Image (cartoon, rainbow, N blue to C red; front, side):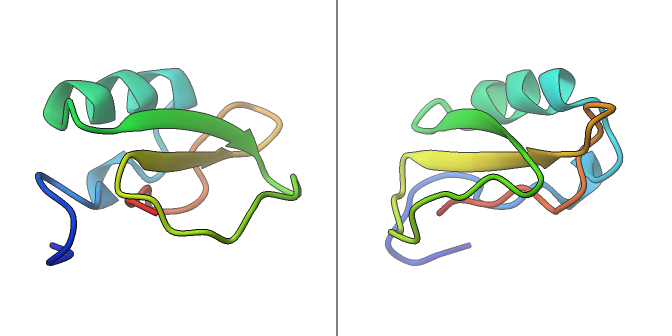
Length: 70
């Protein structure tokens, strides 16, 4: 767990899950974060934020990276 962020900070168990299910699970398990579904290949900012979890998905909506705070 990151020392500067509160609550659960990674969800390895969601790798391979449906993105929408992962989004709901993350927000249920850590109410301090906003989970955002992002399509692989999308350009995003590189800033670190304790209130954001990016849920990277493929074109089928399947999680392709372990979701984590950042």
